[in-house]
Length: 249
Image (cartoon, rainbow, N blue to C red):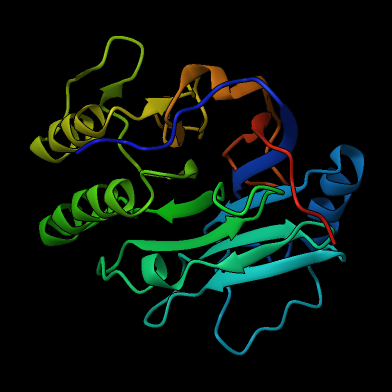
């Protein structure tokens, strides 16, 4: 597969993004609004929203377009993208329709001033009890994204619940599923940017569960880890993505 998108820092601007696993958003609306107001991200990815389908968006920060995927059966889960409404964005339906069982994902395109250079943004939540067949579908999704978006920039954020992967050494001490996932990422030549612990819970070994992928190491700068929102035991990850000059409303 030949990738058509060639990334260069020339003539780029910085898009401020934020990501976290909020571990239930409905009792953390006020805390989320404070973090958003303090940092003014243009793009936000959130895992484990734990929204139900009948829940509205009224508690979320204003001035953002919201794309949600709520868990249809059982409690927990859920993913959400928030795109500040001065940016032009569209739902990436073709990716959103890809079936991955209990692994949840949501996608959009952020438009630039060059119509042929769109940035594809995704947020993925893989629960720790994911089934083997769903893990296989996750790898198929990664390959599908790579094939569908090879002429576009990508930013993929999420909680993948693979604590046995050491991303600094590109090695695993965990299950075959973790080895397969690492191999899949290496095969598409995605770069994983998170190398610090992202989840700390009493009684558990601190782990790097939350990951951020692009195609190039140079695409992300000024990435920092902040305290989790409310009582969430996952950090907030903030950074800046070098991107083509954005189209704005």
